[in-house]
Amino acid sequence: MKKLILLVLMICMAITMFAETVVEEIKEVKEVRVKPETDFYLGMNFGFVSGFGFSARVFGPKLGMQMTYARLEISEDQDSDEMTSKGTNFGIEVLYSIHSSKNYRFYALLGGANYSLKGDYHFDIADVGDDDFDHETRYKIQTYGLGPGFEIKALGPIMLIAEMPVSYAEEDGDSRIFLGLNLGIMAKF
Image 1 (tube, helix red, strand yellow):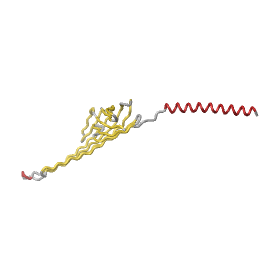
Image 2 (image 1 turned 180 degrees about the vertical axis):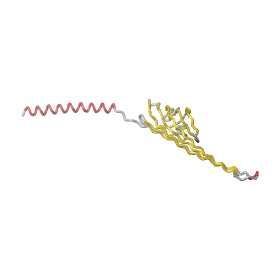
Image 3 (image 1 turned 135 degrees about the vertical axis):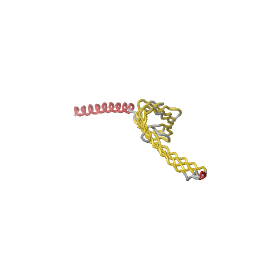
Image 4 (image 1 turned 30 degrees about the vertical axis):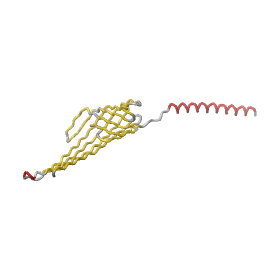
């Protein structure tokens, strides 16, 4: 019986020592493990690849995405001569963080934007004996780009963004390659 009690006590001591070791290891793992942070941004962006207008961005520890949209409408009526211009723009970028800290982030981007503009013009030229003149103009431009980007903390949650992608643009069958510039100002949440 003494041997059985001694055996049970030794097992209990071993379990206690093992449990203490496991608890210490769990505490170390909890201290080392850092929860990944996702940043949300809202603001304005202006660029060939990113698009221009209101912008929203989500950036995780490594990957991010940005969307930009704007709608423009201008109407003018001067003594029966009318001009109406309507345009939309939509841009999207995929972002990959190369290096980041609390105050800045350096990243690579791949993106594209679609610009569409339609102008309707009506001129009343009855005073010279001719009929009215109507004209419609449409522009559609698509841009794509790949390159570096940089964001830096300006003041509080305000971030300044600059990107310089090598860009490719198509407009009515014409294409060109150029170094684009995208600028933005966003609030980080």
